[in-house]
Length: 175
Image (tube, rainbow, N blue to C red; front, side, top):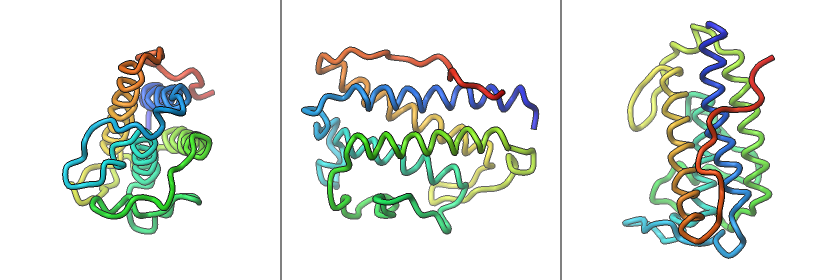
């Protein structure tokens, strides 16, 4: 795959991940369990800041593999996120746990894009919502990360927490 294309993908995907990292880092303790929005048919905690962060990272990690089959998130995280109406995690994850998970996902994302070949990009990926190429899944994943980072950032702004509202591109591009 062309180096210019991979650099452009990482420049934007990395920026979305960095925007999420900045937003999570800026969240004051009193908002960590704040509910962003109601979740019809689900417990209110599914709409809390910490859970939306976890949800975002879980799917970022899973989508980087291109398949649900064989995916296992790192401890202390579990697979319960795959069950939309399933239970919540046994406890609220800490900011530090989620930021560590975010950094691991960021490193994996960068390495995945850096090693991307035309064959990998064209591989078909199937999920309950449909089928797409791995390249399209990267775009879907990037939009998912940025969408939730924006929601979390908006909650902070509505509660007087000043943060950057946009990260234009990643700082650490490929060598």
